[in-house]
Length: 206
Image (cartoon, rainbow, N blue to C red):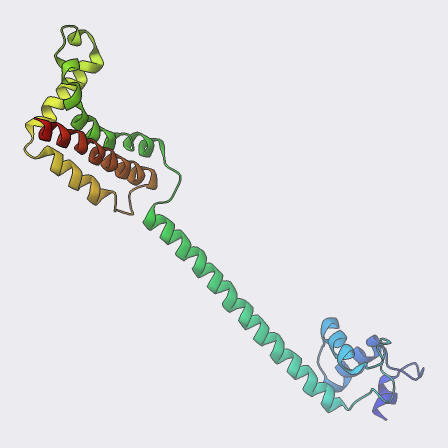
């Protein structure tokens, strides 16, 4: 009897449009084309795109299946929303980590600042080239004059070498400083350590 109600054109099968129209009439609610198509795929065991008499089920089974599909759709939507939030949190975490570690592309000021740490090994290395600063024509070279002034200031500070070494060592471990600056600080430390050995040999030789 129910099958005949759905089989409007009496061709012995219930098409997709007939199933939609019949369910909406029986359940007194609008059903989307997508949901009816899902129902058809579940109960159409022959796969011909229509329901024959032996494939047709009661209205209650259709209703239960519709409710199950609705619950599954809500579950998938909730999971998708959770996944979206998780991905957004991962992006925010990655941005915060990038901000904290300052792994960004260096700015022009960062590039300029990254050169300054090399003044530390330069000052310590000038002890091997003091003759350049004290030569007769040294005053005519502005670069030599600037180096001489910096060297004098550097040596006027007590324990300047140790202060500079520990300062660079601490700052190079600061993640908020740009990576390029931190890298050059570390390289400056390595260079200054390398300069220590010649002075040690000179001291032992003397």
